[in-house]
Image 1 (spheres, rainbow, N blue to C red):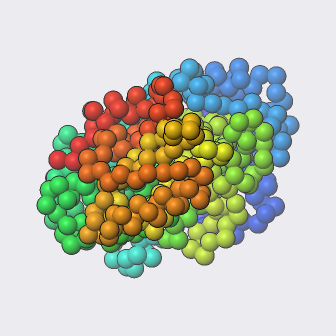
Image 2: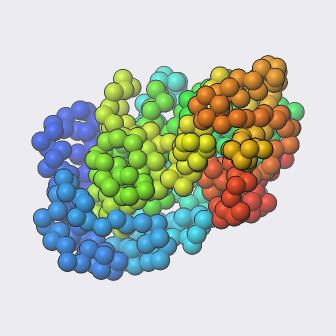
Length: 470
């Protein structure tokens, strides 16, 4: 694609996005947009990607429509890890910046981004953050603390670029960086009077633990009003627990990956809205791959509609989600997506199989002051499943732990169908702090029924290398 064509296509996206956020795109135009973008991407990848040239061989791509995506094969994480640079639809010199996946659960895969990728992805985060900041701060620009990795990883660049365009002061104060550390991060939060922290859900608890450890009071010594979280599930129960500790709201701000970029963004109502111009969405049965349509609950499958350096076709995200129409009154457009965990994180308990969000909701419903938890699954004397929950609590917030334990045991029995015990533990396994590094399950569930779990072993190594609160 020559420079003129690239600019014209980017301009087309920019114009369409402005109309999208103004509510000016009728249904018939959406049908045309999706069909034209799909054909453009299929032509682009079959011509320029060695992998897709083979993967889609024999398919008449000119006849594929958004209504019959099933004629196309899935793309999987295994494909990305095997093919590496052969996934790309262009030379690396066509990209503006090079990223990789973290490589914690497999080989790091290249995730370069071109000019269209960056512009078309970041615009949705910018619209989301502008809406959120107006809701919480009015005309005042908040001070923002960015707490996430930057080297070879898009977090710092993406959020830094967007908040700079918004005109808000930000500091990159990732506490797990050797240059910063938890105490320095906390001091900066205090001294800069930071209003907004962008981080993983696990970091909200880790920061609170570090604050207490270093003699700070999370509610009194800081002016944080809002945690915008990403990288893991964020249940309403988790958000309420964070507010009990910090006096600040915790809302999901972004769903995406290094490979897929900004798939959905958050709003002031705690919901997530699809970046609709950039993706075709499918929901499939996670066990059979059978398509369930464009809405419903299942594994999320995405086809990228931006024809830049690495568009993916029918990519199985390995994430469980519920997709539905926009019923939100926040003012942002786009279908709603609720991410409820990874496919491998579903857990069999008793007679059922439960998603991470269901388990966390059973644990934290009505609970405040929880600094962390670990679910240990084993067998009782009769060979049935049994759960022991280890909790680290701030009793001045939670109240009597005996009451907390009693309610938790009852909810686990009623919702998950298994007996439970609760142990208040001031020294939780450091693996519980790894969160977004590997997975919710690896960080928070110890399943003694399973002899070996590679994700758990990875999380142990991550905990040894990174996790600290000093």
